[in-house]
Figure 1 (cartoon, rainbow, N blue to C red):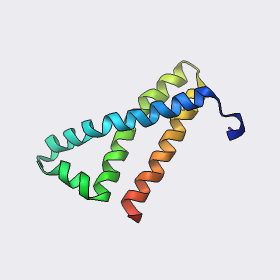
Figure 2: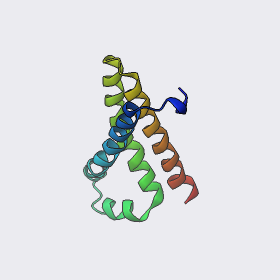
Figure 3: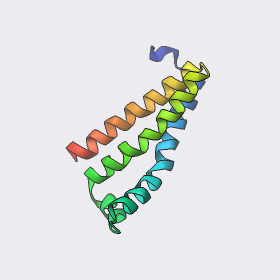
Length: 100
């Protein structure tokens, strides 16, 4: 896939991927709060960069649903957009976890 052939469908898939990560992050924090029985996890996520990376990585798992859905419908360009969103998520997660 060359970026010269970027289409509107790629953009929609990319935006779906980013919005899914943003929407799932509070849900992941809530689940971690219940599982770890840690009431301060919201504060830890706001302060600690490794915690932010962990939450973002777990929130990205929800994109697998969209990727599978678009592959089943044979909408390849939407799937590529989801992959690009996950690659951006990977870069941000690695920066948060190991650089900052």
